[in-house]
Length: 319
Image (tube, rainbow, N blue to C red; front, side, top):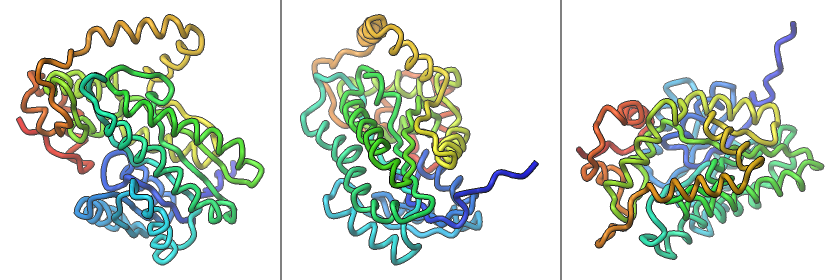
């Protein structure tokens, strides 16, 4: 049997939010398939560590630190990609922020920050990269949305709103770009064990919010091994799949939403009632590493998530 041709080999891939977590794992997978990889993230220190990690694995890699929520960042980033690794064949829009807490403890600025990071930044980057993608024989756009971009989970509203918008953008782009040969894959991951609970920001009763989110993002029945997720994402991009939903829980939720939307809404309302109230003196934007110190969650509950976070550059919880 003839081996499947690797259509990614020799291509140039730009991965945003790739200094840690899922983005770093996707960059590794692309490098292993023979891609030249450009890393992008806000923090120069974490980005340098990620670049060193890929170089040690034999990757052809470069990096560029920038804040993609800055309207001028897309042009600067594309110029750096062209200078260092060439025209973009594969764009993975992965950068994101997670804010956890009740809507009463959130501010309008939180929604604006989420939209700038997870909708307008990908939009600007796609518009800047379109000439490259259209001119490539393997033009590929991968949009990392979330199950939260399909089902509006409570206590995650800024994140959910931005991910819904990103998913709509990605699906619309697929309809418009297919005729030009550009493949678009929209990814809807459920919770993954990346250590994201320490990088998230928490509103309201931060310790209590941290407890439920960290547990959900760490326990095997609720979350997925992130390395396996990254492999599935790159495989879907290589094959040009239009959509990928990851984790059994996410797939079940999507099917339920499609078959019984009223029942799904009732279940979400029930779940919201079990989550922490804002409290009399709600916190705002407490980093997860600090919120861990206010949590009563036993350490063993998050051991898998914490271990993943240590390997993927996430902040260490303060306990």
